[in-house]
Length: 466
Image (cartoon, rainbow, N blue to C red; front, top):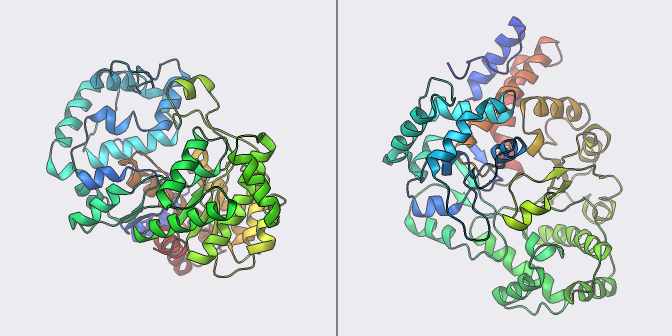
């Protein structure tokens, strides 16, 4: 078999039995996916996925980065360069992927992919160079069927609600098309303002002009610029948004006086700002966005700590989000203080913190979330969205922040078929952790059942107002 029924559970028989009971009670709960990067066009148009490579290889930056690290080029993996090039043959892409599948041994990608192969496509042999064409032909035949269309898979996966992520410059036409279609699947958007908040984002000046045009606001002043965000956030709320998302390099915040904000904004707007001004502007905008969340009720997510597009050649030739983002050390205690001095005691505001710096969990993040009413901790994210990463997260934060200052799980994926696999891994690891607490007499089993349900379902709905 590709996947074992006791995968990720303890090897200790008594603890494993408790985990089995906990997992049996939560494994089929609906999926709440409050943050991710799936394409709303899939659900708007409901067309068949093109081929196995387009579905499972090309959009998955976890897959791309591993294969690229072993010498395969992005062109060989089906990623088109910015300059026009001949598209790669999808079967050839799949064969390269299959021939190198052994590279994923021991990684969460292997868990997710094998789960997808077994549960979604019914495959029961391992993917290798020898089975590549068998896999390709079988998956391609499935994708041609109506029960593998995006909306059918959404329902088959048991998804109750999924949030996509769009820029303020997006017209949300696909969300409008979903609404107009009458399909009952709940697909909402989330407000990701990075292209008009980060002065170092490519095309920032043009983005700013387009932002003013789209909102009919005078973005020549800081007050007009903030009003543009206010209006655009309300537009996103009309399409179901309950959250914003901020992917800044650091967690730095600032709380400048109005005159200083205006002067900084003018330097930014006219292109005369250096790296320090760019960082200060992003810092001020986190505090501004928290204030806007206080006004409109949108939950605020802060995803800091990635050195994005670290590989300059890949970014130049292919663009962003292709596996070249690298974690870096991140400070929270001092960086967040200006924002928290302004908004941290607000019980009506929810700010969800994420990290790529695991050393911050017990030292900074759990104590912060264990004190400030406005703060919650996001789950183990990105490089730590893995069995051991999830286990370390629970062990690092629970003693200080408890379970109820966390927000359950979100899959944060572009690879649509991996959603049920990722939620399954999270549920198994949480059940294993709870079983350990029961086995060591730190939690009664009836309490563990309640917490397992909260972690798998209720906390995400509550935190993200879904």
